Image (cartoon, rainbow, N blue to C red; front, side, top):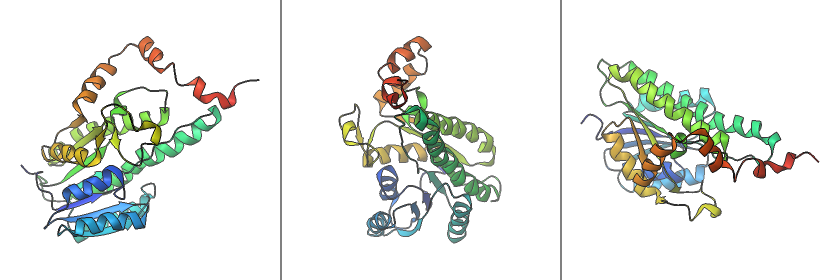
Length: 266
């Protein structure tokens, strides 16, 4: 298959969590990895682990919200070794605990989780689209989440940002498919990483990052349109997207106003 063995791979958010696990999963002799992240020290630790496997690794301390810097990095990486796979992984999770904080949190989350993805996806697509038609060995993978299927009062900004990139990725897949460019949307459930706080250590169906990376690599190699995993989460998501509004309201009842009590009227 055309997407099975990418040799030039760019990954954002590669200094920890799923991004780091994906970097290690793809690391092998003959592969060039371009790894981006915000923490130079942690990024170098991951890079050294990948180099130990015989991988060529270049790192870039970057902020995905900086459109100009992202385009410059992606263009330089593609010049160095034409990119076969770009994984737009970087993102943040934030919650507001007051009504006055909702807008600020939403702005920050959408800037990182949505605009940051666009700043990664489109410079790469523009480069890939210039290759001889039909394009071969060129693919984009977009990190969404199981929360992209749901409506949760726990974090309106986070879940809606994930829903946005899920829908965008699936739509984009159709838009560029005739070129030969693949697009896969990744919707993992709870993955053991720094993004999970201590209170979430016992969440259901929690899987390790290295296992999640293997599952995602298989889906990307098959150029699947979307993968939601593990299987228990996939079935729950299929049920959740068809729930009536009154039941969604009931499920959200423990959250919402009780969490946003800083701004209660006296």
